[in-house]
Image: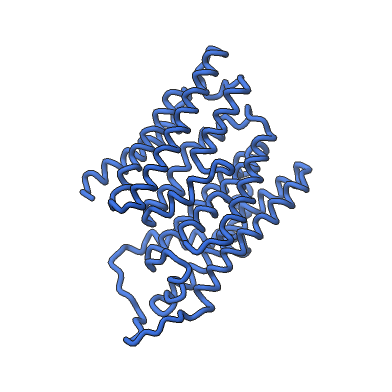
Length: 348
């Protein structure tokens, strides 16, 4: 892609999200979401592969549907209350429509069905943008409107997403689909605690971005898209294999890695709010997710590829891509648990 075009599209992505962050008016927020969607569509379709075009079409249709629902809900709210302000959502019908539309935007279950299919048709870097940056604007709107949304609806979205994210990833062999289900499960963790401690939602989002960036960049560095490909990575790049396995365990929420911290805080908050059943279901759903992360780790570190290679084993592969983003995100994804007391002071 032409670097000038790429720069324009990335700037538009930034502009759209910033516009939504800064807005207190529904029309301006909707405009930001639309700029965001239109900016990522050319990035998704840039390879002209039938799968990429299909993924782009599916993404565009779902996002357009969600945007239309947001516009309809905000107009309904303005009609009933006479206000376009994001914080003055007083109509229950409009509020329910808004949360349904925003759930469709970020792929919360049961509005998640587009997410694995779309992510599967994209390359890893565009998939990374879709899994991280594209979640920011809708999540900002969800956080702003959370206090007007029925708590039961948020709890239902959170529990359904963590369970679907766990169950859905169990039978997958494609890494991008596994990461899509991982994203759905993490979104569930963020939504479940939103009504009690929004700062924990923000913490979970930041940690999720670090871990998902590390996972996508590591898979990009090793050019892996299927579980079977992971079995041959160790001979080419042993260090990368080790750190990728640890990043996947961090995504699963195992101590002493970064991913344990948000889950620990969220479980603690749910227990404080006298919700032991919700906390138990969330913990069991996390075990489901952990299983498929362990499956990936097993494939990477404990198996040898059945392929017989007649040539000399390539012990080191030369790479032309920059490794600084991968190194930084991996460091964040693995080593932030010791600073938990400091973070605890900031979020409480």
